Amino acid sequence: MYTNVAYREIEGRSPQYFILLAAVSVFIALGLGAAYYMEHNGHHVTGMSNQIVWGMPHVFAIFLILAASGALNIASVASVFERTMYKPLARMSGLVAIASLAGGLTVLVLDLGRPDRLVVAMTTYNFKSIFAWNVFLYTGLFGIVAFYLWSMMDSRYGMRFYKSAAFATFIWRLALTTGTGSIFGFLVARDAYNSAIMAPLFIAMSFAFGKAVFILILISTCHLTGRSLGRVVLFRLQRLMGIVLAATGYFVVVQHLTNLYMAERQMVEMFVLFGGNVYSFLFWVLQIIIGTIAPLILLLYPRLGGNLGAIVLASILVVIGGFAQIYTIIIGGQAFPLSLFPGLDVSSTAFDATIGHYIPTLPEVLLGCSGIAVMVGIIVIAMTVLRFLPLSLSDSVVDPDHLHAILDQEDGAAEEEVGKK
Image (cartoon, rainbow, N blue to C red; front, side, top):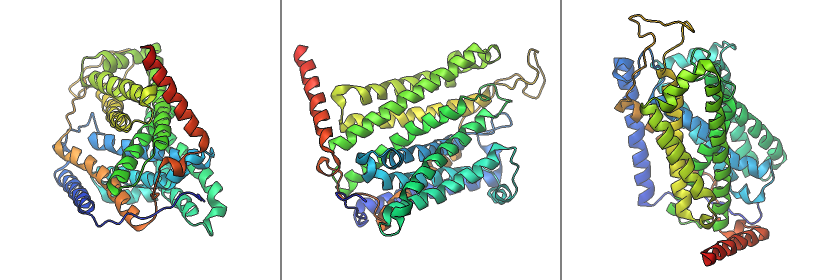
């Protein structure tokens, strides 16, 4: 498929490889132990309660699920939109998507309290519930992406299905992210949710989070395996992440302006934005300043084009902001009291009209971290067995001729700007 690109498995013989696998195994074991501890003792040992039933494990799970959909954006840009430069990254994109989704679903299953009840969820469906739809969306993505990867990697038989698999994967991942966002958009009981903007917001979030995770994994893998990573690849990934991050910020603005415009939503907006609580701090400091504005400067400032340090820092900041954003949406939305009787004051001994209290506990955090460990473990083992990573991503391999001119032009503009100063 790619005449100038050769793929090779990673050897998996270095001390760093075994240290990484050992660390992954430790975190997975800790996560399993945390799940057993919470299941055996009951969820009262966590920070969750009858008011806040989705805690830190759900924050990790939703982030990983969104990252799975967003990581596939690289493959979609290459195959659906015919951007040749991204094609050497398409296999890696599909692998990161499958691994991230597996890690997120692992956390969800282990956070059920009764993981054996998953059989009921997979055999008995209530199609009036968005959760039933998501069972098909999540499991379907595994099959479609696996078929998509086969069509890319089997040059003899798979090529005939490549385009069809690419379009199917593109549509399916949009549907999956729409379904995940609709979990919150369809919850009419929570004033912070119950909005049509949740679906496009989650799609934009997935693009940004998935791109950041993919970039961090790609750079780390190339560094650890000694494979070259050219400036052009970094430049294009940098600009693409800047665009999708700006789109995410736009939908965040639309979401909160819409809620502020609606009289019945103004109280919950004041609680989240200006309540002087942990959610206001997470929103303004971590999500907006650290997770959006700072990385946008690093990603879109012309003089930092293709700068490895700026790209890595921006990706880390986007991940931090992403966790803060999901925490604010999930936990903050539950912490604000239910509006049982709109327009009336409610007072009782059953926590009515009171702000929910939640502090994450160590078992919840360990369970969430185990999902990341599952993702990393799948990626490392898969790259050892199959050819997902190109031998080289240097400019001479992946750079069409016109991109050199673009980069040289931007360098010249930057030098001219410095000269004027």
